[in-house]
Amino acid sequence: MSGILSYLVFFATVVLILGIVVLGLNLQWGFTGLFNAGVVGFYAIGGYTHAILTAAPLSGHMGNFGLHWSIGLGGAMVVTAAAAWAIGALTIRLRGDYLAITSFGIAVTIQLITLNWQELTGGPNGLTRLGRPLAGWFDTPAAFNAAYLLMLAAITALVYGGLERMLRSPWGRVLRAIREDELAAVALGKNARRFRLEAFVIGSTLMGLAGALYVGYIGFVSPFDFLPILTFQAWAMLIVGGSGNNRGALLGALVVWSIWTASGIAVTKLLPPSLAAQGAAVQVILIGAALVAMLLWRPRGIIGEEAVVSRHASD
Amino acid sequence: MGMLGQAIADGVLTGAVISLGAIGISFTMQIMRFANFAHAELLTWGGYLALVVVGFIGAGLPTAGLSFGLGLLAAAVLAAALTGALAWGVDRLVFQRLRRSGAHHLTLVFASFGIGLVMRHVIVLFWGHGSRFYTSELQIAVEVLPGVRVLPDQVFILAITIAIVVALHLWLRHSRTGIAMRATAESPALAQASGIEVERVIRATWFIGGGLAALSGIFVGLTPQLNPEIGGSLLLALFAAAIRGGIGSLPGAVVGGLLVGLAENVMVLVVSPGYKQSMSFGLLLLVLLLRPQGLFGERREGDR
Image (cartoon, rainbow over all chains, first blue to last red; front, side, top):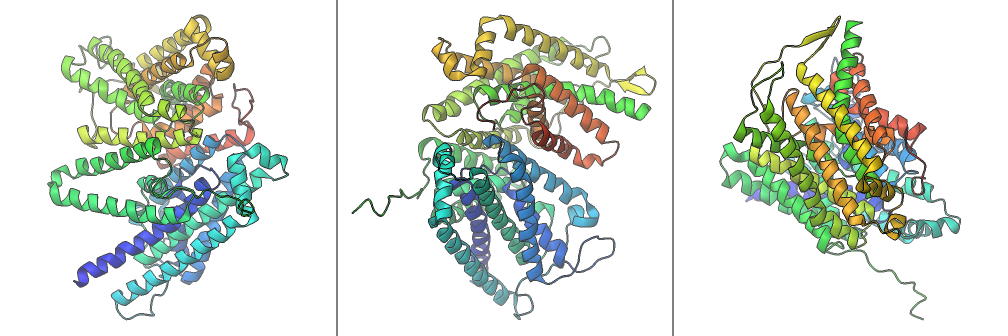
């Protein structure tokens, strides 16, 4: 019984962390129309920054500063924001697909750095003994896990509420105006490039925060926690839930992660180990095909964006 | 000196293979206005389709110092045609529908992302993650200059690539379809108004892009092996080559490919080879910073 309960706590934790990633992606794609093909890159920047800042000092490592976890979380957000700003400033002025290509490139580069720059990232072995938020406040792992889940729920609620407020503010309306008709927005004196860059940086920063919260939860970091498939999963969550709707983003995280986990369990239970690679491939093929089908036949997703009508229109 | 010479020789040879792959990505980006992330998987598919054919007819008797004979050449031609058909089939199934429904062009980019993933994992499903070889023949490298060694296969690949690029260039200049393609690349609306069937041009683009991608994948598989990652690991290099040369430009894609191949191989002398993929990305960033329209591209509306 307690086994199932602790698994559910773990599952909910992962869903909330991914939910924060998808909220960030929704700000970029759903509300601003920016294509980020390197979600996992920003997630990894956050995770590794947190790890490098907080890991216990170890000889032969450049990082491992052993700082407090709050500095790790803050640092993760700052570094991710800086990375997003750098490539955003370079590519947002260009065709939309150039941002897709460069963000994809960032993700590849980060993956190579995590694998190859041993002194900083620990290479394939990763880094251990990280600063974990709330660590030391609880006696048992179960209490820690429950408290971490509560903390994550609070952070997710904060992010959700903050985003909703921002999107309903004049700033959010400008974003959607630019997405719908850039020329008109620019003619009204809005600096489209600046608004886009702001949305891109804020969205990526949320991904970095989520990465830091993830490694803070598991207590170690390795390149294998940041596989390229994660970018695709985040996109699947957004499209399935309904891009342009923050509740849809969270719902998508829950639905897609449930399907992914369940199909993963089915593959390991039903197939002999010799066919594990094939089973994993089928899992990706099915999700990929479902996603393309969704784009073709139900582009709005489960919830989709609310039609916004001026409150003066009903008068 | 020998090291640098070898790096340059290797760079030209990799560059030729990248060029072939980059031509298709560059044309799709210009004619259909979207970055096709699935293009890299066409390389992989071409490589494996040729492997299937070789499985039936064999790679042929090794001739003239090459590791293969007529069998592999026939397989390459067949695989190129099949991969072209595959590229076009995917278009009919997904991209064409999205175009007709008036989807945002970034939706096509996203769809290509998903399609690429599916295509790669279908390969994993059938062949697994391991490496495959067309032949078990051993090749002896020939010293062409002091300290610079190349394989006969590599020389053959370079020669074929040059021949293909020249033929394609002439075809684009002089054939009716070639001229229609260039016109559509310039302005789809205007091309349609002058009576060009845009869907036909699109079909030609997929067949050419897919066919060349297949050859590129086969050449990667020849020097020396095939695995499900060959396309994906070249994706950034392909984009870098296409954008660097200026999208929609044939000479641009070829020169871009050569520059990317050279840069990768020369940089490896200085930087750890673990970062190879990032080098083409670094080049790409540099180009976007300095000359976003590429070496041979023209500034156009929408590029900003």
